[in-house]
Amino acid sequence: MTPELDTAIGIARDAGALLSGYFKRHVRAESKGEFDIVTEADRASERFIVENLRKRFPTHAIVAEEGGGYQTDASEFRWYVDPLDGTTNFAHGFPIYNVTLALERAGELVAGVIFDPVHDELFQAARGEGAFLNGERIHVSRAPRLDSALLATGFPSRKRHRNLNVHFFYQLAMMTHGIRRAGAAAIDLAWVACGRLDGFWEFGLNPWDMSAGVLIVAEAGGRASDMNGGPVNVRGPHVAADNGLIHDELLAVFADVFAGTFQYPLPEISAEHGPAGT
Figure 1 (cartoon, rainbow, N blue to C red):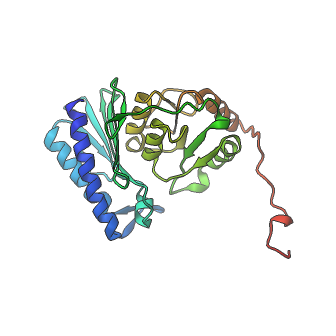
Figure 2 (cartoon, rainbow, N blue to C red):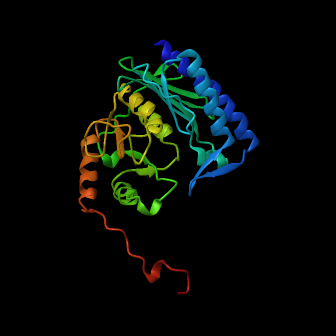
Figure 3 (cartoon, one colour):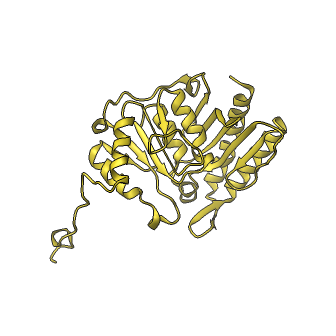
Protein backbone atom coordinates (compact mmCIF):
# COMPACT_ATOMS: atom_id res chain seq x y z
CA MET A 1 0.00 0.00 0.00
CA THR A 2 1.31 3.42 -0.92
CA PRO A 3 1.58 6.21 1.69
CA GLU A 4 -0.94 8.22 -0.32
CA LEU A 5 -3.51 5.41 -0.28
CA ASP A 6 -2.95 4.72 3.40
CA THR A 7 -3.52 8.41 4.19
CA ALA A 8 -6.62 8.56 2.00
CA ILE A 9 -8.12 5.56 3.79
CA GLY A 10 -7.69 7.18 7.19
CA ILE A 11 -9.10 10.50 6.00
CA ALA A 12 -12.08 8.84 4.30
CA ARG A 13 -12.98 6.86 7.43
CA ASP A 14 -12.78 9.95 9.62
CA ALA A 15 -14.81 12.02 7.15
CA GLY A 16 -17.39 9.23 7.02
CA ALA A 17 -17.70 9.30 10.80
CA LEU A 18 -18.21 13.06 10.61
CA LEU A 19 -20.98 12.59 8.04
CA SER A 20 -22.67 9.93 10.17
CA GLY A 21 -23.06 12.44 12.97
CA TYR A 22 -24.71 14.94 10.67
CA PHE A 23 -26.93 12.21 9.19
CA LYS A 24 -28.29 11.30 12.61
CA ARG A 25 -29.10 14.97 13.26
CA HIS A 26 -30.98 15.37 9.94
CA VAL A 27 -29.12 18.47 8.76
CA ARG A 28 -30.86 21.11 6.69
CA ALA A 29 -30.33 21.13 2.93
CA GLU A 30 -29.77 24.28 0.89
CA SER A 31 -30.12 24.98 -2.82
CA LYS A 32 -27.00 25.02 -4.96
CA GLY A 33 -28.12 26.36 -8.31
CA GLU A 34 -31.58 25.68 -9.66
CA PHE A 35 -31.89 22.04 -8.59
CA ASP A 36 -28.68 20.86 -6.87
CA ILE A 37 -28.55 20.82 -3.09
CA VAL A 38 -25.77 21.08 -0.57
CA THR A 39 -25.73 20.56 3.18
CA GLU A 40 -23.63 21.73 6.11
CA ALA A 41 -22.27 18.19 6.13
CA ASP A 42 -20.83 18.54 2.58
CA ARG A 43 -18.92 21.64 3.59
CA ALA A 44 -17.70 20.28 6.92
CA SER A 45 -16.50 17.04 5.32
CA GLU A 46 -14.72 18.90 2.54
CA ARG A 47 -12.96 21.23 4.97
CA PHE A 48 -11.79 18.25 7.00
CA ILE A 49 -10.53 16.31 3.97
CA VAL A 50 -8.78 19.23 2.29
CA GLU A 51 -7.10 20.38 5.51
CA ASN A 52 -5.76 16.91 6.20
CA LEU A 53 -4.58 16.30 2.64
CA ARG A 54 -2.75 19.63 2.67
CA LYS A 55 -1.06 18.81 5.97
CA ARG A 56 0.18 15.49 4.65
CA PHE A 57 0.84 16.48 1.01
CA PRO A 58 1.30 20.27 0.92
CA THR A 59 2.41 20.42 -2.72
CA HIS A 60 -0.41 18.29 -4.15
CA ALA A 61 -3.28 19.93 -6.03
CA ILE A 62 -6.79 19.20 -4.74
CA VAL A 63 -10.00 19.39 -6.77
CA ALA A 64 -13.05 19.24 -4.49
CA GLU A 65 -16.76 19.34 -5.34
CA GLU A 66 -17.72 22.29 -3.16
CA GLY A 67 -14.85 24.45 -4.37
CA GLY A 68 -12.62 24.22 -1.31
CA GLY A 69 -9.68 22.64 -3.11
CA TYR A 70 -6.15 23.83 -3.68
CA GLN A 71 -4.62 24.54 -7.08
CA THR A 72 -0.87 24.38 -7.65
CA ASP A 73 1.55 23.62 -10.45
CA ALA A 74 4.23 22.53 -7.99
CA SER A 75 3.39 18.84 -8.21
CA GLU A 76 2.32 16.21 -10.72
CA PHE A 77 -0.17 14.88 -8.14
CA ARG A 78 -3.85 15.89 -8.10
CA TRP A 79 -6.53 14.69 -5.67
CA TYR A 80 -10.21 14.47 -6.59
CA VAL A 81 -12.47 14.75 -3.56
CA ASP A 82 -16.19 14.21 -3.18
CA PRO A 83 -16.82 14.89 0.50
CA LEU A 84 -20.40 13.60 0.27
CA ASP A 85 -21.42 11.62 -2.78
CA GLY A 86 -25.19 11.14 -2.65
CA THR A 87 -26.13 14.49 -1.12
CA THR A 88 -29.78 14.24 -2.19
CA ASN A 89 -30.05 10.83 -0.52
CA PHE A 90 -28.35 12.21 2.58
CA ALA A 91 -30.62 15.24 2.80
CA HIS A 92 -33.73 13.03 2.61
CA GLY A 93 -32.51 10.47 5.12
CA PHE A 94 -32.03 7.81 2.43
CA PRO A 95 -29.07 5.75 3.67
CA ILE A 96 -26.87 5.51 0.58
CA TYR A 97 -24.01 8.00 0.54
CA ASN A 98 -20.22 7.92 0.72
CA VAL A 99 -16.91 9.73 0.80
CA THR A 100 -14.66 9.28 -2.20
CA LEU A 101 -11.05 10.30 -2.85
CA ALA A 102 -8.86 9.56 -5.85
CA LEU A 103 -5.28 10.46 -6.68
CA GLU A 104 -3.98 11.23 -10.15
CA ARG A 105 -0.29 11.33 -11.02
CA ALA A 106 0.72 12.99 -14.27
CA GLY A 107 -2.78 12.39 -15.62
CA GLU A 108 -3.00 8.70 -14.59
CA LEU A 109 -5.23 7.50 -11.75
CA VAL A 110 -3.04 5.73 -9.20
CA ALA A 111 -5.16 5.38 -6.04
CA GLY A 112 -8.81 5.47 -5.05
CA VAL A 113 -10.94 5.09 -1.93
CA ILE A 114 -14.72 4.90 -1.52
CA PHE A 115 -16.04 4.71 2.03
CA ASP A 116 -19.67 3.87 2.81
CA PRO A 117 -20.16 4.77 6.48
CA VAL A 118 -23.70 3.36 6.64
CA HIS A 119 -22.47 -0.19 6.03
CA ASP A 120 -18.88 0.39 7.22
CA GLU A 121 -17.55 -0.68 3.82
CA LEU A 122 -14.29 0.71 2.50
CA PHE A 123 -13.33 0.01 -1.10
CA GLN A 124 -9.76 0.74 -2.13
CA ALA A 125 -7.33 0.28 -4.98
CA ALA A 126 -3.83 1.27 -5.98
CA ARG A 127 -2.79 0.88 -9.60
CA GLY A 128 -1.38 -2.58 -10.24
CA GLU A 129 -2.19 -3.87 -6.74
CA GLY A 130 -5.78 -5.09 -7.07
CA ALA A 131 -9.00 -3.91 -5.44
CA PHE A 132 -10.16 -4.58 -1.89
CA LEU A 133 -13.25 -4.29 0.32
CA ASN A 134 -12.43 -4.00 4.03
CA GLY A 135 -9.07 -5.60 3.32
CA GLU A 136 -10.38 -8.56 1.30
CA ARG A 137 -9.61 -8.77 -2.41
CA ILE A 138 -12.65 -8.28 -4.66
CA HIS A 139 -13.45 -9.22 -8.25
CA VAL A 140 -16.11 -8.28 -10.75
CA SER A 141 -18.99 -10.63 -11.52
CA ARG A 142 -19.01 -13.41 -14.11
CA ALA A 143 -22.34 -12.55 -15.75
CA PRO A 144 -21.66 -13.53 -19.38
CA ARG A 145 -24.36 -11.56 -21.21
CA LEU A 146 -26.64 -8.58 -20.85
CA ASP A 147 -29.69 -10.84 -20.50
CA SER A 148 -28.24 -12.16 -17.24
CA ALA A 149 -26.94 -8.83 -15.95
CA LEU A 150 -28.06 -6.37 -13.29
CA LEU A 151 -27.06 -2.81 -14.14
CA ALA A 152 -27.13 0.62 -12.53
CA THR A 153 -27.28 4.18 -13.77
CA GLY A 154 -28.08 7.67 -12.56
CA PHE A 155 -29.87 10.82 -13.63
CA PRO A 156 -28.86 14.44 -13.04
CA SER A 157 -30.47 16.48 -10.32
CA ARG A 158 -30.72 19.41 -12.74
CA LYS A 159 -31.80 19.90 -16.36
CA ARG A 160 -33.38 16.45 -16.47
CA HIS A 161 -35.44 17.52 -19.48
CA ARG A 162 -32.20 17.76 -21.49
CA ASN A 163 -30.86 14.39 -20.40
CA LEU A 164 -31.24 11.52 -22.87
CA ASN A 165 -30.56 8.73 -20.41
CA VAL A 166 -34.21 7.69 -20.19
CA HIS A 167 -33.85 6.17 -23.67
CA PHE A 168 -30.83 4.10 -22.64
CA PHE A 169 -32.53 3.21 -19.37
CA TYR A 170 -35.62 1.81 -21.08
CA GLN A 171 -33.78 -0.23 -23.70
CA LEU A 172 -31.47 -1.82 -21.13
CA ALA A 173 -34.28 -2.38 -18.65
CA MET A 174 -35.96 -4.52 -21.31
CA MET A 175 -32.77 -6.49 -22.07
CA THR A 176 -31.43 -7.22 -18.58
CA HIS A 177 -32.47 -8.47 -15.16
CA GLY A 178 -33.09 -4.83 -14.27
CA ILE A 179 -31.64 -1.38 -13.67
CA ARG A 180 -30.94 0.08 -10.22
CA ARG A 181 -30.72 3.79 -9.47
CA ALA A 182 -29.18 4.31 -6.02
CA GLY A 183 -28.26 7.98 -6.40
CA ALA A 184 -24.53 7.71 -5.63
CA ALA A 185 -22.26 6.99 -8.61
CA ALA A 186 -19.24 6.02 -6.53
CA ILE A 187 -21.28 3.36 -4.71
CA ASP A 188 -22.56 2.03 -8.04
CA LEU A 189 -19.01 1.70 -9.33
CA ALA A 190 -17.83 0.08 -6.10
CA TRP A 191 -20.65 -2.45 -6.36
CA VAL A 192 -19.63 -3.26 -9.93
CA ALA A 193 -16.12 -3.90 -8.64
CA CYS A 194 -17.29 -6.35 -5.98
CA GLY A 195 -19.81 -8.12 -8.22
CA ARG A 196 -23.08 -6.88 -6.71
CA LEU A 197 -23.76 -5.15 -10.01
CA ASP A 198 -22.61 -6.27 -13.44
CA GLY A 199 -22.37 -2.85 -15.05
CA PHE A 200 -22.96 0.89 -14.72
CA TRP A 201 -23.25 3.86 -17.05
CA GLU A 202 -24.04 7.52 -16.60
CA PHE A 203 -23.90 10.90 -18.32
CA GLY A 204 -22.50 14.14 -16.96
CA LEU A 205 -20.44 12.95 -14.02
CA ASN A 206 -17.58 15.01 -12.61
CA PRO A 207 -14.03 13.79 -11.97
CA TRP A 208 -14.65 13.49 -8.24
CA ASP A 209 -17.73 11.32 -8.88
CA MET A 210 -16.03 8.65 -10.95
CA SER A 211 -12.23 8.72 -10.55
CA ALA A 212 -11.90 6.37 -7.59
CA GLY A 213 -14.63 4.07 -8.91
CA VAL A 214 -13.23 3.51 -12.39
CA LEU A 215 -9.82 2.65 -10.94
CA ILE A 216 -11.34 0.23 -8.42
CA VAL A 217 -13.39 -1.45 -11.17
CA ALA A 218 -10.30 -1.85 -13.35
CA GLU A 219 -8.24 -3.26 -10.48
CA ALA A 220 -11.08 -5.71 -9.72
CA GLY A 221 -10.78 -7.11 -13.25
CA GLY A 222 -13.49 -5.05 -14.91
CA ARG A 223 -13.48 -2.72 -17.86
CA ALA A 224 -14.28 0.98 -18.13
CA SER A 225 -14.56 3.27 -21.13
CA ASP A 226 -16.68 6.07 -22.41
CA MET A 227 -20.03 5.03 -23.91
CA ASN A 228 -18.49 4.95 -27.39
CA GLY A 229 -15.77 2.53 -26.32
CA GLY A 230 -13.01 5.15 -26.09
CA PRO A 231 -10.65 5.57 -23.13
CA VAL A 232 -12.18 6.78 -19.89
CA ASN A 233 -11.99 10.54 -19.53
CA VAL A 234 -12.89 11.65 -16.02
CA ARG A 235 -13.84 15.03 -17.50
CA GLY A 236 -15.75 13.44 -20.36
CA PRO A 237 -19.49 13.45 -21.07
CA HIS A 238 -20.19 9.83 -20.09
CA VAL A 239 -18.75 6.64 -18.64
CA ALA A 240 -19.49 2.91 -18.77
CA ALA A 241 -17.99 0.32 -16.44
CA ASP A 242 -18.73 -3.38 -16.12
CA ASN A 243 -17.32 -6.85 -15.58
CA GLY A 244 -15.67 -6.85 -19.02
CA LEU A 245 -17.70 -9.80 -20.28
CA ILE A 246 -20.71 -7.68 -21.23
CA HIS A 247 -18.82 -4.58 -22.33
CA ASP A 248 -18.97 -5.05 -26.10
CA GLU A 249 -22.64 -5.99 -25.95
CA LEU A 250 -23.35 -2.92 -23.82
CA LEU A 251 -21.49 -0.66 -26.24
CA ALA A 252 -23.53 -2.08 -29.13
CA VAL A 253 -26.75 -1.09 -27.36
CA PHE A 254 -25.38 2.38 -26.71
CA ALA A 255 -24.44 2.74 -30.39
CA ASP A 256 -27.97 1.81 -31.47
CA VAL A 257 -29.58 4.30 -29.10
CA PHE A 258 -27.16 7.08 -30.06
CA ALA A 259 -28.18 6.37 -33.68
CA GLY A 260 -31.88 6.53 -32.81
CA THR A 261 -32.45 2.81 -33.28
CA PHE A 262 -34.70 1.37 -30.58
CA GLN A 263 -35.27 -2.36 -30.32
CA TYR A 264 -38.05 -1.80 -27.79
CA PRO A 265 -40.36 1.16 -28.55
CA LEU A 266 -41.81 2.92 -25.54
CA PRO A 267 -45.32 1.58 -24.82
CA GLU A 268 -48.22 3.78 -25.78
CA ILE A 269 -50.61 5.01 -23.10
CA SER A 270 -54.17 3.95 -23.85
CA ALA A 271 -57.55 4.03 -22.11
CA GLU A 272 -56.96 0.62 -20.56
CA HIS A 273 -54.09 2.12 -18.55
CA GLY A 274 -56.23 4.94 -17.15
CA PRO A 275 -58.21 5.14 -13.89
CA ALA A 276 -60.86 2.53 -13.29
CA GLY A 277 -64.18 3.41 -14.93
CA THR A 278 -62.76 5.66 -17.65
